[in-house]
Length: 561
Image (cartoon, helix red, strand yellow):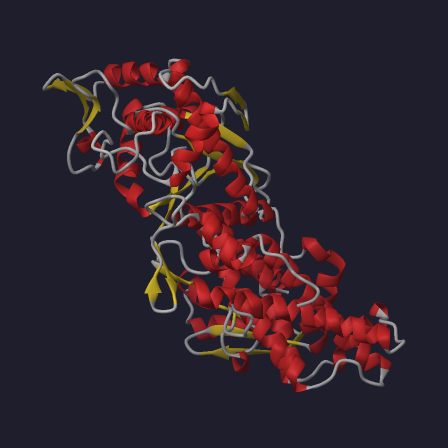
C-alpha cells in the first residue's frame, strides 16, 4: 500500500504540472512514511510542504488541493490534513488487510525487491590472519558481514562474499617460528621463547601434526607435512594451511560461507605490489626520506605521511591493502563494502589515500566501510577473556559450543555495529522471554503448535476462505500485527541502504511481541470457520515474515521448543 500511495502522489504531481500550478522543472519524489501514532492514520506525506514554494501557495492550501486530486478511493477510509500541511492517509479495512494476502502469495519473496538491479557488490569481512583460531571479535565481524550480504541479496544486489587471508608478513613468520619451537620442545615458559611468538595450546597441536607428517586440506591448498623441524618454510606452509582449515571449520559452524578466498601472498607472487609502488612513484605522490619510501597521505586528509617501503626494503602493511583494493577495482566491483574491527579505522584512511594517489578513477568514497566495536563477554558478573586453547583470547568456537549458533549470531548482530556490546552468556543460553532470540523463535514455534492442534482437532485450514473474511480481523491486536507486517519490505530496503542489519533483529523482536500479545489475548481455533480461517491466515503471515527475517540473520526457525 505504501507503493500505491506513492503512485497516487506521482499522479497528482503530474496533474499539478498539467494545470501549471507547479513548474515542469520540479523534480520531486514524494516521501511517504508509516505514522508512529495510529491516531494519525496509516501513512503520511510531506508532499504539500515540499511543493508549497514552487507552487507559491501555503502548505495547507496545497494539501487541500492534493487531497482533492487524490479524491475518494476504495483503499482509503479518509484523508486528514495535520500540522503545517502533512496529509495523513487512513486505509480502509480491506486495504489494511491486503498485506496478509501479499505475504501468503509471495511467501519467501515477501520483503525482497530489485533495489540493487542485479549490480555487483563485493562484501569483504572477517579477513583474519591465519595465525590462530578466530576470536570472538572476528565472530561479530562474521555475522555483521554475512547478514549485510544476505540483506543486500534480498534487495537485488549480486553479492560476492570475500575473505582476504593475510598469509604473508612478519606475523606469519612468527607463526612458523612458534610452531618450530614447539617441534623442538621449546615451551612458552622457556628463556628461548620470543615475546612475539604465539603461546596457545593450538600451536602445540600444529607442531604435533607436522611432526606426525599429517596432511591438511584447506580450501585451495593440499599440504603434506614433511616432519622436518629444521625446514622453516615447510613448517610455515603447513601451519598456514592448518589454521586456515581451522578457521574454515569455525565459520562453517557459524553458517558463514564465502565465495572467494583471496591470498595476500598472491599479490607478491604476481607482482601487483611492485606495480602499485611503481605507479604511486610515477603519480608524484611519494618521496624518499631516511632510506624509506613515503606516501604523501596528508594530501588526502591523513594527519601525517606514511611509510610504504621501510629502510630494510620491506613493505608496510597498508601497501598490500592498496594493491588488493586495486585488484578489486579491476575485477569490476564498482561497489565494495568492507566490514572491519574498529581498530582498522586509521588503516582505512591510508588505503583510501593510496587509492586516490593512483588516480585511476576510483571514487573518494570507495570502498564503503562498516566498523564494529569490541565485545565484552560476561558470565554473571564476571568478564570472560581467554580460553585455554587460544591462550590469550576467547575463541568464536568457545561461544558457539556454549550457547549455540542461533543465539550467538542473533546477539552479535542485534546491536548497531559501531556500538560496543556486552554479550551475556547466561542470558544467551536461557530459555526465557528475556532472551530475545528465544522469544522470537518461540513465536514461530507457537504458531506451528496452533496448526498441530488444529489437525489434532480434526479441522482443516481453508486459506481461501480466510482471505475472503479478513474484514473480521478488527481487534487492536490484529490491527497492530497487520500494521507491523506491512512495514517489513520497507525495513529490508532501509537495512540495505543504511548497511544496518541490526534493524532486522529489532523488528523481529517487535513482531514477536505483537504476536505473543495476540496469542495470550484469545483463541485462534474457534467454532466459526470464517473467523477461524481469517485468524489462521493472519498468523500464517506472521510465521512467514518471522522465517524471512530470521533467514536474513542466519538464524533458524524451529517448529517445536
